[in-house]
Image 1 (cartoon, one colour):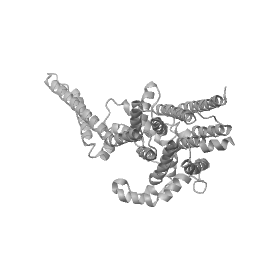
Image 2 (cartoon, rainbow, N blue to C red):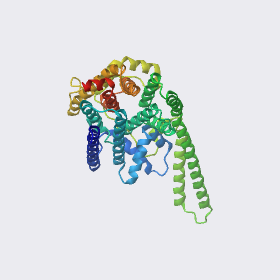
Image 3 (tube, rainbow, N blue to C red):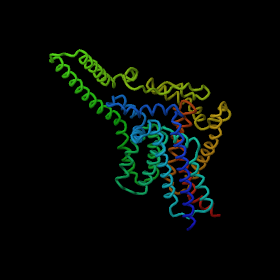
Image 4 (cartoon, one colour):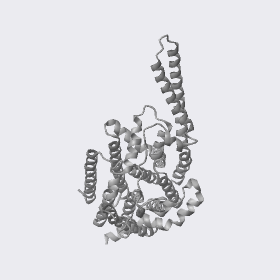
Amino acid sequence: MNKKKLFHTRLIALFISYFMVKIVTLIYLILQDTIVEPDESTFSEVVCLFDETSLIPQQISYYLRWGPVFLLSGEFFRFIGFTCLNALRFSSFVFSCLSAGIIFYLYLKISAGIELSKKQQLYTLISIAFFLFYPSRFLWTSLGLRESIIEFNVLLILLIVFKLMHHHNKITYVFILLGSLIALNLTRQFLYFALIMAIVCSIMFFPKNRALIGGTILFIVPINFVMPSIIMTTYTSYYLAQKNDEIESIRNQIIQLDKLSGNIPSKKQQLEKKLNSVKLLRDKAVLSHSDSKSIYRDIPEPEIVRYQRSVDARSRIPTKNCLQRSEGVLQWFWCNLKYAPIGLYSVILRPNPLHDWYSITTQIASLENIVFLLSFIFILVITVKSMRNGRFQWFTTTLLFFIYVCISGMAMYEGNVGTSMRHRLILISSFSLVFLSYIFSSKFRMRSLK
């Protein structure tokens, strides 16, 4: 067995270890069957909506708003026998393992044809272990949250762009790219635009398959803007037709009941009550597009209320105090721009011992954030070096653009330190891939052989 095969065996052992620890974590969470993060309650309630025989349009809008791919995958595992909460956790387990598989595949492609030195092997193991076992990433991708599907979506898009950049002009890749971009847009729109911007900036510098990738993006962006409206309009039309047929059927039953000589008042009352209920649902659906907020308040449906946490004032980011975009786009943008330096400090440097040493949770998070900060500093160093040399320079450039756009955007819209820490975990996979690209760069190989 040569050195590279032996090293690949060690890498596979690392991934198997990750898989086993994930399984143990999943079993523990399933046995506990309790809410760890309040957002889990919201998502599990949305999944349980499919217990209803006829979904009202507002329930479909919840799916479009909170990630249909993630929630529908939860539905699949729920039908196998899991509870709504544990179905989402099992879905997170599956997607996080698929993400690990994409990282391993990209490593194989990036390192193809290179005889690895001992230093490269060591740094590769550290880089991949950093992605797999980064504590808060491991935790959030084990719960019934969207982080696992978002991470998988981003990595899948990067993988397809990697393939297309290598002139793999298969139409299958284009369709997968289209589907992945749509799924990411419906799950977390900000990351969708950040990734689009990163890919566009990269293909401006590197012309490989520029027409194909650029054309795909130009095709998908307008579709993503109108697709939720098309879905809602189509389903609402179907729903109204269904309710009108149901109303007509109940009216016919009442007419037939009136014609009977032995009129049964109690049965007629039941039918009239059912008729009024169906009419109410139909009328609510008609009004849903014009006054959606009032519909959410009084619609007779299973309660779906996001758990409102009283965010500690010490963890709030000043941008949270800015007006909503609906109240004035220019005022909102200027307010966020004014607080951008504080936002950057909060997103990159917090939690830290100076501001967030007031509970055991924030203390642990502060210590973990030191690792994130050191990684980000290393990214800044690599940015300068990768502009002069590097293997797969275009791929590294895409990742770097994505990281910087995400950090800048988060500085403008994150409301508190806790959510910003959770949302920025999507960057851990990009950090790891940038590290791998640099490890196999020509300059690093020359230094490691000395």
